[in-house]
Length: 560
Image (cartoon, rainbow, N blue to C red; front, side):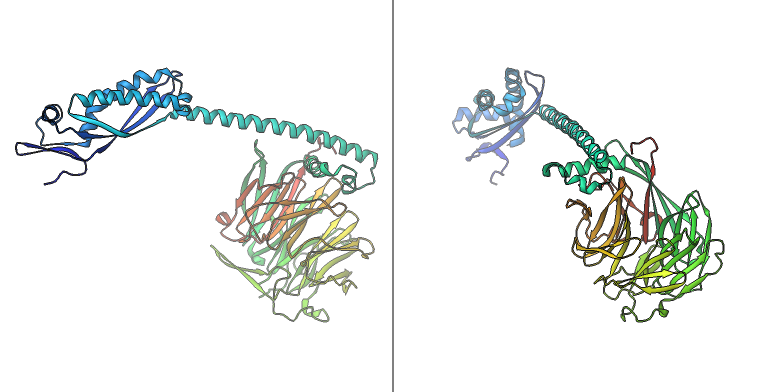
């Protein structure tokens, strides 16, 4: 029977059969101490072969066989290990760990010591040691220390960079404040153009940070299925955002919730919520005492897409893709004061059938209107916004004016679906799906400017910026662009998501709805490079997100 691959010799009857080819062996010795106290791990490999001389055969049999029928590789390794370890332990303190790991001369010294020890042991047991010789030296404790020192250096470098950045930010902010004092009537965007081109981006970031400092904290309100969701937001030490969501069940009498909007009534901040067949006024401090504004029962899968309060009339107004424009007296919520149904508008804007987006939720299915500008989107009223005694709204690509209870179309053709009407200083911005932005005078509603600042859009909102604002544009497939109407600077709120479904912002916080409507994605307004947090609302509400609102609570002690 021939020798196996791991056998060096075997006793066949009274004859000792020897291996005639070299056998490769490996030794590993750990916990050898270098001169600097670091632990070394040494791997040594060589080949061995038994000698055929009768005297050597007898030595091999007496020393290694010792009554066994065969000699395996493991038995040879065990026999050589003590002398090899002793040689390694003796030579290890001659150098520090770094020399053993990085210097060829040090490794050669260790190899020579192990070869000498191996030859001495082999001489006494009828074996010869053969090349190739191989040695590897490692030190986990040294590598851990080197990694720690590297991380510490990175931390110190980053801290120095942050400190330098803070100093530079403080200088730019001081310069910006000086410019504001020198030209109090100039918009922040125009002031940026007076700064050198290389400093404009950094100054914009510094000014947004200064504007955000006015806010002490932020609150997010979202609607999902039958629930209002409150999310408290707090800053952590590393600029990450800590969130604490809480479900609030509202009266189910008007169906699933569709929209949420903030309003001020008699100096008090309230939430105006659109539902399938009515609206609600909710005090954030007492949500269980919601006032329900009832409309006629609706079989429509859509909901009231925006609810607003007119201070001039002390009335609640809301728009609905199917129900049209509905108005309630603030103190008479049981039935509408008047309604202008979608079917009443002369000349349909679109003959396409309304598109329905059905959100498959854990608690059932919830239907909502498709986003404007999408194929087959409903041509009903949207985006209602109070002006003075008038209200403006949109249907498709056209703006409409509501005066008393009369609705008329304004002579402005936006060219594509209007996504949003956004107040910005003395202007009213009309943001269209094709990326066109129309600026209207808020008093005369005359067209001031038409500009195309982006490609196809999904949503738009305002980022408050001192006494001015910047515009947030959600691209069809890309990051959120943040642009100024008086400057050419563009920043992008980046994330791994594409096709975000909506965006809202306070001075300190930007919040977007993920493409699958399950998460809220959060950024610090002054750091667009990456999200500072996420909130997985679907796991809590068991329904997908229909709308979101955010506002900051001001810090009275912050500099204006």
